Image 1 (spheres, rainbow, N blue to C red):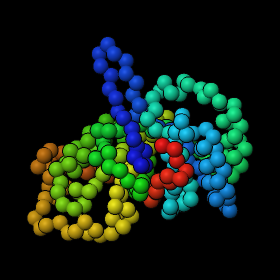
Image 2: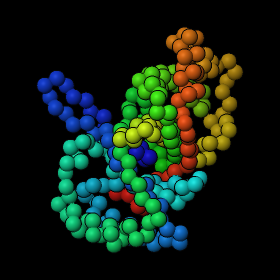
Image 3: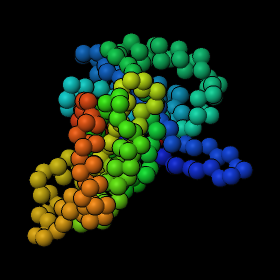
Length: 253
């Protein structure tokens, strides 16, 4: 999400406490029917009052699928310490939400995610158009094995050549506190817009280029590929895919 995105992954060293700012809060809101433009107008007023200097947010609009015209309101680059903080103007902020935000909504949900830098490919790619893939994983999935395979995918993809592979970039997130419904989100950046989804937009690959499978097997072996296939086949219980665009006019981040 414009990179949900603008996240810095900071590590701690022995003897030094360093805040990790790889968390993001995502409010997904759906305006009532016939209230989309009224919601946007009211949100812009709220944004100008409360989100220009602190608690800045990025807003993305879903443009297809069952949740079309819903929005993701994203507060990124957070640490756990940020959850301890209270706004100095919390009362006024919350009263304004009650007045200019919630009355226009049919539905509102909130989730917290962690940005996984090691499972992302070219995460610094700048874009305003995206494909979002949400995977509801089976509860008994070996998550450690899955992360290993996803990390291997990134390693392989970095070596791939050709139009599609050279332009592929995505950010990977894991939802926190998701109970028995573990969720991951992959956000592919479309720096050349939705038109780049057309077949062979970047040109046909030259004949003879090794496939992903060939490259993977060369790096990790055929047995590892077979194990990967078995893991992936039983990993996902449900998947959702949709298109999304960044709304600069509704954002302060």
